[in-house]
Length: 116
Image (cartoon, rainbow, N blue to C red; front, top):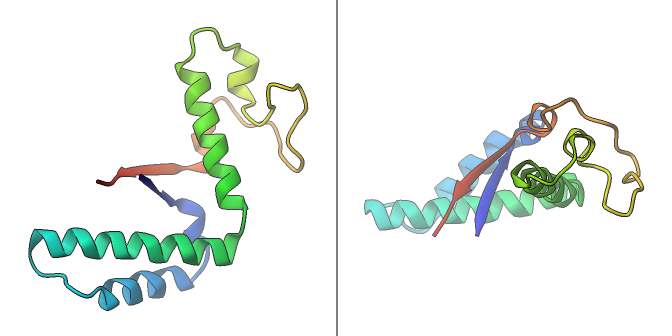
């Protein structure tokens, strides 16, 4: 499973406290195995915190990031599709979205961290 840190989380002051509390409440932080488990504990806490603070916005952004990555990797994708990843293949724009500049990551900023 991939964990994605969202830059938008930094807009809430409670982020730092959430990370600190999750890290400090991890049962074992000794050795590399303990640190890895503590990081997974923090990831779960952040997912829950994000869902409570941002609701479905996070899930929608993840889907849009995935769609953009797919379009950018597809040699058959049109320039218009890549410039506006919010438009689904059905031809209608997702409600409440706007056309982005050439690089979606300027507006969304997804950071991927692989976990095992």
